[in-house]
Length: 303
Ligand code: MN
Image (cartoon, rainbow, N blue to C red; front, side, top):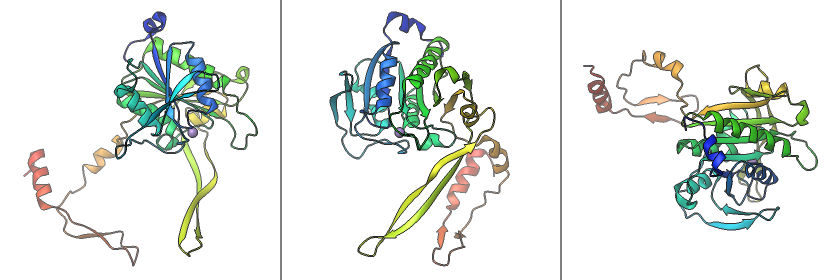
């Protein structure tokens, strides 16, 4: 969508798919759906269970089932046993007969910042829509990890509506999604909306090895919630200063800056190279096919 979609909004024919990664019954989804209904026709297809931190998933080795459910406000929604990204692809591929104009995912109770984006079910649902060329927005609220009681999603839902209205007005480049993070502060204390880049997340994961009753080891990953470097211009910096962060995300993860250097590497045919020689137990070998290099040379015109 290179142009704005305001004409659809005016006609009342805008069709918005709402999904999430916390499960169809999550209060964040309900708050988002209610706000989106003020903008267009809303369909909901979301996972029936929590898929937080499940990453970008497509389920191809088993059937996907969908059932109709009622949300807490009495409206109906579809719940699937697939992942968030499955829900989006199913909806686009024809489960919903009406063409989808915009996909919005959330509202996640915790921020999705920096490197979180490929872990996040909330963001990867929006990524799936971007792959299909449909404008997409992921919405998360930065509620504190030790927050007690019910999270108030209403301010974040209203900020999401502002972002959607901007997308409708200005359009969004094809295959770009917006990752929106809203600070968990009163609305009148929010300083505004900043367009940001991804910041640097700092993870505090640890691994604990335990033994089951049969003496076999199993492992728990645990640790404090991730922190981050609150650099100005980044998503993390924006939240730290009380702004709503809107990061445009693309799926081209190519590290362009290293390509020139890698092109100076000598890609010689190698026979049986030992790699990772550090472990006495693990000896991994790679065999390189001489033909591959001959084909590459032919392809690039080298002799
Ligand atoms: Mn989640």
